[in-house]
Image 1: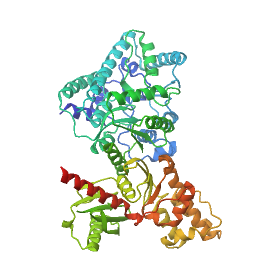
Image 2 (image 1 turned 135 degrees about the vertical axis):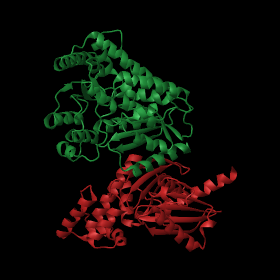
Image 3 (image 1 turned 180 degrees about the vertical axis):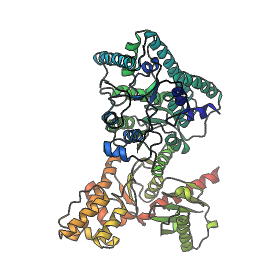
Image 4 (image 1 turned 90 degrees about the horizontal axis):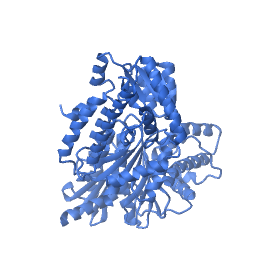
Length: 373
Length: 263
């Protein structure tokens, strides 16, 4: 089995690693979203798993409890919760990322509760006061975990967790750096598998696989028969098939700003200061998601830097239908990209991939635009 | 040099045969459940009209919804690029192309060379498409071709508020029950379709000159409503607007054949 095959094995919700973990009598906590400091959960010897909704098809329960004008990701998650697909989780941790996630969390607590829930209150902007506030929330979170699971989360355990997670961040960044090459040795589709594995299996084991993949990728010849180098930007995307559609039409995805992508791992946690403080600071002030008010210029700069660094020919913006945060973000991104004459394609999607004919027409037309430049 | 373009759409299939850049013949056939069959029907009809056989055609470009399923196409190009190319070939000053087809509508922005630089599509619902008009014609017991002229006879346009064509049909039925003038209802329908199309125009940005292509371009009511909303006159195509996609494909076929020869 190749390393990529192993990464692909992590895509179903209950993968073999989680299965083994549970057989050892250990706990698993599912979370939304990138503002939750994984390391604290890891330091409690609990496996943190990002909640995804792979396997969801239709959402009758999700629609009924959340209305059919809620984003399809949250409706799919609620549907899977109803269908007992998250029963391997010992609890759910959420933050108030957006209204849809908040309603999802409420619905789970109301209709499909778990043995443990926690809402990590996350401030809506980033400054000294809110970072201080978030430090208190993070401290409270640690205490709640300790009390509920009868564990002692020492500073040493936290420091070790931070080290382990920083290793992932460093390795992931190194893997991304290889994609700067004219012939990137890993496609966006393959990268999606790696990113999914990062948030779905025990971190030490992920690091081992990642280190191997990095070594092999470095020596690979790479992909050179593509039409354009693409940066993919948007919200919760964990479907390699979506990326494959773009890449099959000649748009090689060389970098991104995605929930599971650069926005998840780009910045390291400071290993020299108090661990909880360092975690709070890093998680709140890292390159943000559109929920953060006042941070759009920084997000825009981050995107611009990546476009330059990775020699991007065109940007594909994807947003889930009914997501107000990303409507606004994409509106601002489009305006700026237009000013700078950087070509972009604006795609609306649902969490479950369908209507691929429509997507293919748009992507193909976009490739024809890029080819003509 | 004889080339062809074949556009397999959702309601009709079209083929255009070009000889040295001029239209030799073209066809418009109804779509069948199999794109391969639609494509063949369209090509056969166009070949028959120009007394040619498939062997005479040196390069064929496929386009449209069924473009990947055209077995005799040498390559396939998106219908957006093809409509851009086709419209520009007749009207080089065109910058905005509004293509209203059977089941989709799109707005295409081209540069001075006819190359597309931006586009917006609606292919997720019937609002703003030929299908909407078909449904309405049936509800009002009128022929599709009658709708346009009748819409221009209205003095007191009815307001159709529903976003969805299915619910719009319900609205029309109630208007009919209220004895609203048929011309007013039809005008309201045309206004609704134009409004839907305009939202795509705004997304891409309106720039003169404007050309309307696709089957619905033959409806003078839709054209009139769109021109009124845009505050300008659109440039009229000298050929059947429904074949513009296939024509663009044929022109691209000509370019591809020429560059093959130069290689």
